[in-house]
Length: 448
Length: 95
Image (cartoon, rainbow over all chains, first blue to last red; front, side):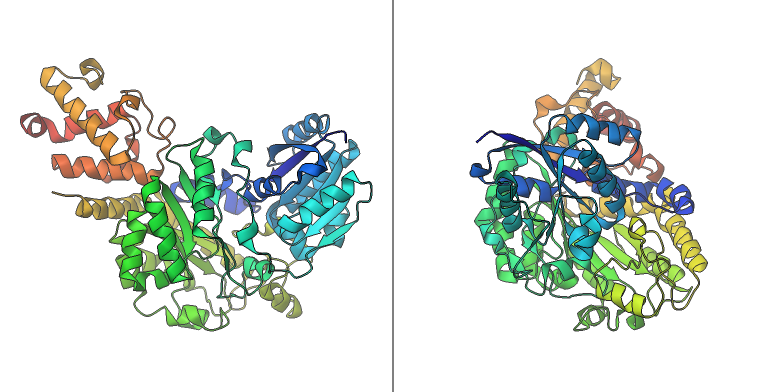
C-alpha cells in the first residue's frame, strides 16, 4: 500500500477574549507566569494518537502546533497542506473557532480532515462535522485506528463514537510518541496517569467526558512513559495531565515511590485529601513534586454546598489553611484555585478571596470565572434558566470571560470584580510576597 | 566561573566557585554547565520555583536576605555570584 502522510495538528494557546480583561489582567506578572506554562504544553492527545496508529494504515506522522487562524497561522496550514494527505485536528472549546478555521483551510487545499477531542465530543457531531470529513466522539485510542483504516480502505464514515464512553481501559494505552516532539521547545512535558475524578463537580467537563469511573494506568506504565521522555531530557519537568491524581491512596504511594529515583521535578492536580496522609506527603516531597494544584473553588460554605455530588468539597472547608500549611511544609507548594461568579457569590466574593489568599500561606493562586462548558451539568442548568448570554460562546470559554448572567450580581460587576481581584493578587508586591513565603519554607527545610 | 566575570580578586574567585557549587548541588545540574553568562531559565530550564530554591539556599548559606524587589532579578549564574558578593560581603569572604 502506498504510504500517506498525516499531520497531527494541535490547536493551543488559550487567550482571553474580552479586551478589557486582556488589557488589565494578563499584564500582571503572577498571572502571566502560569499562562505561559499552560500555553507551552504539548498536546498529549496527539502524541497518544500517534502511538495507537496501526502499522497496517501505512501512514507517516508529523506533529504540528497552530495557535491562531491569522495570516501566519493560515500560511503555516497552506504549507503543511502541501505535504499532508490528511490531518487530525483537536482543540479546546475556547479555540474551537480556530480549529474549525484551520480545518476548513486544509479541506480547501484538498486535505482530508478528522476532528476530535474534548470540545468535539461535548458538542458533536453536527457542529464539528461542518468542518471535517469525519469526527471522533470520545477517547481516541479505539476510534483513531478505525478511522485511519476506513480512510485507507476508501470507506470513511462521518461519525465515529465510542460504544461505551468512559470505559476505555487506560492500562492498554501505549506510551505517547514523545519522540515526535522537539523537547527543547517545551518547559514541561505532560504525562497522564489517570482519567476522571470521583467528585463530579457541576462545572467539570472532564467528569462529563470521562464518565463516573476513575481509571488509572499501572505504575510501571507511567514509569515507562517517563523513560521515553528521559531519552531526550534527562531531568525533565513533568506536568501530570490528570484531573485528580491521588484518589487511590495505595496506588498513589506506589507511584510516588517509583518516581523518587527518577530525578524529576513535577506538578499535578489533586484534591486536598492528600494533606490527611503524612506518609503520602513525605513521599510527595521525596519524589520531586514541586507543586500541587488544588481546586479549593470557594472560601464560603454556601458556595460549596452542592458543588459536587456528595458535598465532599464542603466537608473539606474546615481547617483548610492548616491543610495547605501541612502540604507546603514539605516543600511542595500549593496552587489554590478559586472560582468566582457562583450562584451563592455576591459582590463581596472578590474581597473574601483576596483576604483568604493573603491570610493563608498559599504560594500560588489561580482565580477563574465560573464557565459553563458545553455538555456539563452547569451548562444544562444555566441554559434551562435562560442565563446564557449567547447561544454559542465557545471562544469565551477561556475561564476568564463571563458567558452567563450571574445570580447575585450583574455581568459588569463580575467582570469588574475579577479585574480588581487580579490586580490585588497578581501585582508585583503580592507575587513577590508569595515567593518569599516559598523561600522561607525552603530555608526551613535545608540543613543548617 | 572566572574571577573577572565574578567581579573580584582571589578571595572573590573562591567565593564564586563556592556559589557555583551550591547552585549545581541545589538544582542538580552538572557543574560544568554553569558559566557566568549561563541563563538559569533559558539555558538550565529552571522554572520559577527552582530559581527561588537556589536563592533560598544562598540566603541560608550566607546568612543574608534578598530584598523582595530583587527576587526576580537574579537571572544568570554571574548575577547570583554578584548578589552574594554584594549582600554577604566581607562575611562571606571571611567565612
